[in-house]
Length: 137
Image (cartoon, rainbow, N blue to C red; front, side):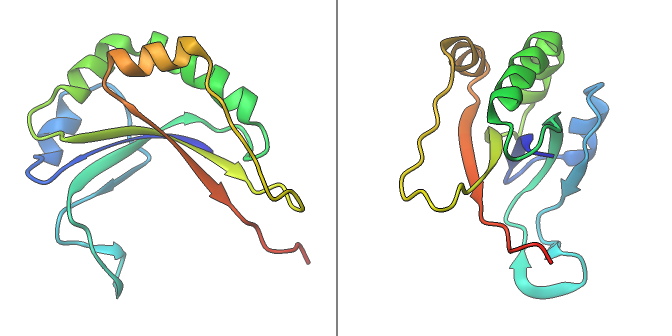
């Protein structure tokens, strides 16, 4: 799952949020719960929220992720307006996961104007998370 929609908030009523949308989350978290189930090492969640799969393209398929995101935002416009304007949602983003392309020192990524416009209409932040994968055995 390389592109995710994340929504959250400090005083978010997660159950009510999920009842208000037809979108199905792939993950949820609640304020005060451990970030990793039964593991206090990484602390507790500061907010409640949910994430939704926008694109399941591979981490090396950034172009496909962007196309999928545009399709997702258009197809789910009404549900997203409801979800993102829900009382208690104070943060939302589209997070694109990409591979670090070793051995390059500099990598740049750009978003098409259409995606920026759609995300802007919904007040969605755009985020890129770069992952360094270990060598395969």
